[in-house]
Amino acid sequence: MLRNRKTKDRSESGPSLRENLTGLLKIMQNDPTISDELPIAKKLIAKSMRWLVLNEFFLVLQLYPVKFFIDEINHDAPNVTKLLLISFSFGVIHKISDVVNKQMALSRNTTMWRLWRIWWGYGHRVLLRLSTDWHTLNGTGEKESLVSKNILKFENMIDELMFNTIPAALRITFTTLFLLTVGWVYAILSLATMVTYALMVRKTEGVLEPLRKKSRKRMKAIERFGSELNKNWRTIKEIGREEDFSDQNDSLLLGFCEFEEKRHKTAMGQFMHQSDVVSASRMLLYALFSLSILWQQPQLGLIVLAGEWMGRSYSNFGRFADFQQRMSEGLESMRELVALMCLPPTVQQPAAPIWPSQITGRVEFKDVDFRYPDATECALTGVSFVAEPYTATALVGSSGCGKSTLMGLLQRLHDPTGGSVLVDGVGLSELDYNRYRREAISVVSQDVQLFDGTIMHNIRVSKPDATDEDVIEAARLAYADEFIVKQPNGYNTEVGENGIRLSGGQKQRIAIARALLRKPAILILDEATSALDAISQQRVQESINDLIERREVTIFIIAHRFSTIESADQVVVLDDGRLAEIGTHAELQRHNGLYARLRAMETKGLLD
Image 1 (spheres, rainbow, N blue to C red):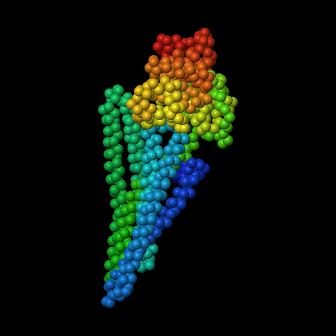
Image 2 (image 1 turned 90 degrees about the vertical axis):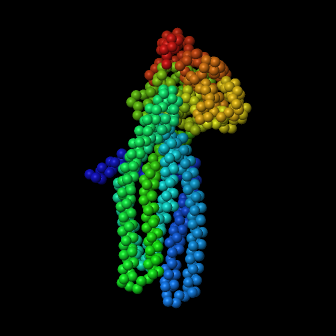
Image 3 (image 1 turned 135 degrees about the vertical axis):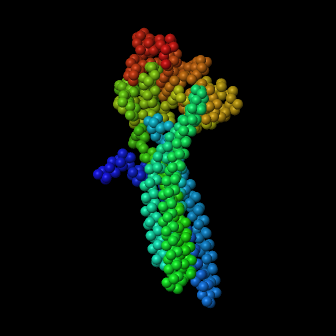
């Protein structure tokens, strides 16, 4: 029954750490962006471990001449030559130990920075590769915790393990082995202390691990709420609830602090039990010294050497308690990190991607169905229509009818759950996914996102090799040049985080310029004029009309404002995820169906 329960718990919690690590290594070995780094990292770790073993060996060996020195000076007639040789050995061993220690420190620094670069770089690379579904389900705080904070905790655990805990274990092991050469009874005491202490550590972990899980859960709630405060500060100020949200934050912090106080009291109690093992061993050591003096001729050098070695061993046992905290946090972070990196994106690059010699921009939606993950109803059902090359197609419908979802499929943010989307007769799932997004399609969404940099950088980011003249020309086409040149530093003006120094209309025009810079075969305008004032909207609309008239790009327009779609070659009307009507503006007006009703509602100011 117990075995079945454990099996069930394990299956519910997902793959084990070992399974995740194995899967991760396979993924990394097959990933050309990181595979070349793995053998180098492996060699660096092996080199660091060799220096580490040598360092601990010589640190223990440094004390060995003490026995001979004390025994010699304790003779009635000390041998001067022996004393000089012993003194010389002190210097030689110390010098060798110092050189080895410096080499170990250099190797440690190189290894840890290399590992940090691999994990940090690959973690963020994987984060950007993950599908839209995953990013939609996870907020900014969760992403920051999953990658940045987990990598930091994992790195701290590895550093603590490799350069504190393993050295402590090696030092105790070498001490035990050296004690065998001078007094087996002391070696047995050292070994017994190690075993007993290890059992106590295991018992302590059984008590503390559930508390740590609760602590991490509370901390994640605090981080999530803090991220919401930072993200929604403007809304909070607009509704005048600064104090209310601050009080909620204080309540979370107070609950966390009270729990942490209880958790640390429990931890200190457990660590005291571990310390009792060391105290008992120390007591037995001095009892052995006493018996040695009482029952036989005392060997003062042996007693001093054993005392020094055991004393240093006792001080190293404390490192295991320090590592317990780091290990628990690090392993949990590692599980989350490895699980994230092993998570395959729902949209995959095809094994043998196709790329036509030229993309003209003919788009066909063929009996397309789509349902979001975990949703009970389809967002799109049986949608079929064709957009011929260099034409403009407007998508119309009430909010939530599936317009943006349909364009998300064209961007291949998702794959259809039924049917197919074809570009120039080739299914999107067969096209080179990365090249398609880089070269063939541009999007201007209603939620514009800008980088914390200059205006020039924010336009050029879609085509890094574009010249300044190309950027300025794209800005002119988007009617953005006229406000950019009025900025303090023109195109080199800093926009601030997410363009906070710009108005909504200015941000939108920069986004349009960014899309036009690439000269794509397909251009999606998703509520591209929604944030513009009347004058800006008119100018951008003139730019869009000019694009339509030039017949250089296949355009898809999503808009609630019907004035922005009247010049479209065809209008696709969606209703509850289904194709309701299709035709030109004039045809649909005469048909007096859903399109005409929606237009009438806009005229009356009733359409959202």
